[in-house]
Image 1 (cartoon, rainbow, N blue to C red):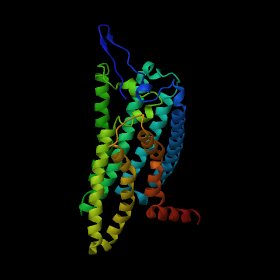
Image 2: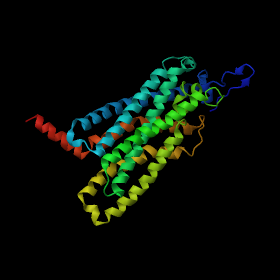
Image 3: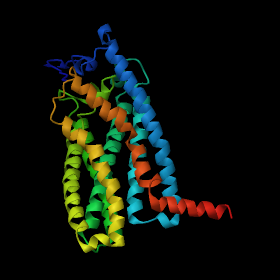
Length: 320
């Protein structure tokens, strides 16, 4: 939706229409009770999802940190990915606590500093999460393409990409918002983020950089499949090292389409809040998306044969 302000002789007018109406949801319209109920159900679902992800990711991160034999470049990258998912879940809880701490629809108009900082942190956590998913794809691609490389050197480069690239985007975005907040822009800070419509308004806010991450991952996905098919038909495909790469590939190749396909599909649909497409997109982005951290913890930790063997070994030692 769009929100406008007029330039008058006395300065900028108040924004109109109200943000909830611009986002396709009128809080004073009783006919929207069904939609409100749907949004509240989504909120309940993603709260459960993020709680589940937060608990499982914390356990998985503790497991990888606790066992010395599990400390390698591959697992260090997994740890950073776990951390990004933990931050994403935490930022959602903080965002809800701040933006929904009052029933007043003008709450963020009166407390703009807290809302701004909350949204900056929220957007950074989301972009960091997407960035580290890209790092997972890059790492697997590097393993398959480059025979010999310094994993320690590449690890620091991956860390710089995973946490640094989102910082650049978010700082540029926040600076532009702060400098041009009063220019009558159609979607200023307080006009997009503080009502029930925040759930679908925020979808398009950072969709372009995030979509770029998924486009790159999709290209890596196709190339990784090509390399694996070629190597499987060669004598190299029988080596123990390559079998290790195949195990990592199974998890990473599952994550890339799992986390990115629905973004690519919905990118070609109009962002019309009154259409049924938005409800479907919200379901994928919020309800199912909140369980992504749980899926990552299961794939990269709990179902990892190396982790299972190490845990079993330590368990036997404790009982001797």
